[in-house]
Image (cartoon, rainbow over all chains, first blue to last red; front, top):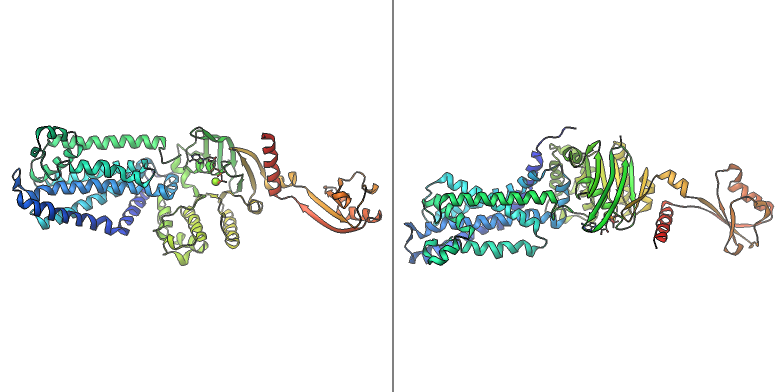
Length: 258
Length: 309
Ligand SMILES: Nc1ncnc2c1ncn2[C@@H]1O[C@H](COP(=O)(O)OP(=O)(O)OP(=O)(O)O)[C@@H](O)[C@H]1O
Ligand SMILES: [Mg+2]
């Protein structure tokens, strides 16, 4: 009658299967972000950057590195985690997850853990790619790592929720395309919100992505648009909200278990 | 102690009640066949026991443990082959079957997986991607996945739908071997001969209710009458007096005599033929009809439908 308290093998199996899926789509998963980053550097870093001097004492090329990484972390985390759970729902293989001796926490750790791990790897790849284009300066490496991990986890959780909520592929792409991408572009990835007129600066403070980019940029260059505490606080809030929602989802079986 | 006991289980999907208070006990080591028309609630009931669907009311115990509170214990004991084939088409046979084993928390056992794949004639295909398999092979992969963690109870939801005759025989063989190894099997099917061939007990579902649960042989004895039908050379106007007190009837304008066989040894087939011979009735042809589970099932569903109308 005894069963282990934690189904570690089950979690590892989900994690490994998700990682194997990445390997199958290696081109999309890894090469695309690298290529995109390189393009951003050519366009923003070299073409535009050559006409810009510095932002807050940092060369423009180096200035956009944290924003670029954040952009990829957000989109990749959401995309990977949402497709990770949407796909089994779509093909019907989710029956196996639901009938296995796995708790809600274990399912989340498996899927979200894999999506977050993938994002972190991509973030590091982009960081190395950026190093080819501009000299890197990381003032607070530990904080940078913390932001990298927290952002990946927070938005993988968010993506996992979207994957459970989505009933169609359109819905799956809806939130990332219509909400996340605009917010990211308006979130100070490529500029400091200090460069905006006062009104838009205030509006920007309602954009959650500003807090992410700002905190991350602080870990690189020692300065950001908002305080470090606000950035960390916001991240914690996102994680807490997502966890709360997930508890409700697994309690009610919402769109997962009829 | 029954290996599964289902008590007052009900299920509503939104406003629609798919199951009304189901009570059912499955004995250890038996093969139980669940029959019933489309939409009767067979899949819903199975899915509840396996944890793929949540119940609205009631209580299910597997080997004495509650499926909600002790789900880690109960789910390890259960393997499910769902009605629909659902596989990651890009995975290989080997990887998807070992994935299932790990998912259920079992340590790696390549020998077991190899045995399974050989048993299911999938060994040659172990490195093939699912997308490269035929429908019948995919169905066998589903079975291999369900057995990967060595369950004590196997649910087969229409295992032989869309499967050719040979593979069907193979599956029946597999089910028998599993039972010999002590695995309890619950299967749903629309093929009556499958239930007739395999099951120890049969349950009929209809409209979300379990209409009847019975030992197969008892059921057939109770409801299945054997009839002897004698075709006559010359039509008769009335039954010969020699058959007074026998359960015989004239049919087809006197061209046939239908006789409901009884347990009475004095009133067997030989005796009726002899009596008719003595009475000068010439018999052209004879046939014995044994009503199958299918007939019983049609009668049951038919009469029920009639009473509802
Ligand atoms: N997820 C669902 N949401 C709403 N209704 C459902 C759902 N699943 C099943 N039903 C309904 O519940 C009833 C029972 O369905 P179920 O699949 O259990 O029947 P079944 O006996 O397995 O039928 P079949 O022989 O066709 O497989 C049907 O009326 C069906 O439409
Ligand atoms: Mg069904």
